[in-house]
Image (cartoon, rainbow, N blue to C red; front, side):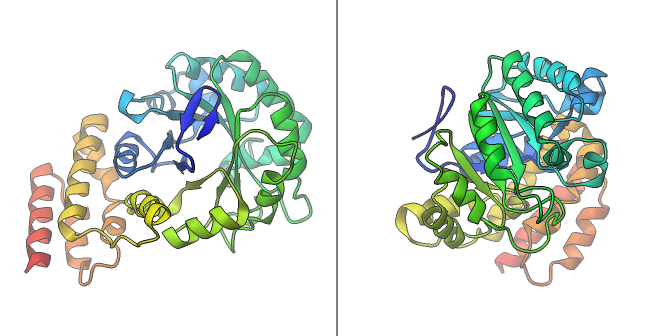
Length: 326
């Protein structure tokens, strides 16, 4: 078993990464159904929370069936991060996670996310202040370093453990890499094999198949893996990985009927949570992913992304299901 504070997870847990505009309650619900052991909210701006911005506050919505669930916060001001952690604590998540890994310019240029990899003393001070302000386990997600010349994550890992974080997730790229190239797990292995490290260490980056999940589990010895982009439109990856780890057998991809049902569930939850207009609009980014690899799907995709009513979308999904069953 893997423990994060008082939270007990499976022997080799699978985590759903926090992803902006992706890991909202509807998508988390689907990934949970398919076997994600720990899910996270989209990353939430500390400045947005303390200003009571509706978009940021809406991201605090969590549901009992999602547990264990972590709320991920980002920001560049220590006082604001402490205040936002206190706000997040009030909605009783299982974990508060600090984002020290987001590489996008809009975040890093404000001194948040991966920008803190250039100021380790501030990162440590911020983390310590958050750990001390909440009774909820605090975890961190970060990267190898800012660039190839500053891969300081081994030093960072020890410092963060020493001030009280309960788990660490490491994305095997630098900030400069963004999401390009291959993730380098060698430093993740170095951290996990460090005898001083007692907290769980999770690896993230390029896990896109059950075979790779097993290979990286054995090769790098991590306590679990976090899956991000590979889960978009592919939530069954959690089920497939778990089955492969347990049986060494590959599960086939879901049939069209299962894909269309997942789309219906996702759409209906999105509408309940966001309202009909926004729910329909934001669902459009998911259709291509859910039907990736399905031959001759483009005409159906065009219909789905131009439909404006729930009834019409459900009719198209029924047509898709019937067409590919013939």
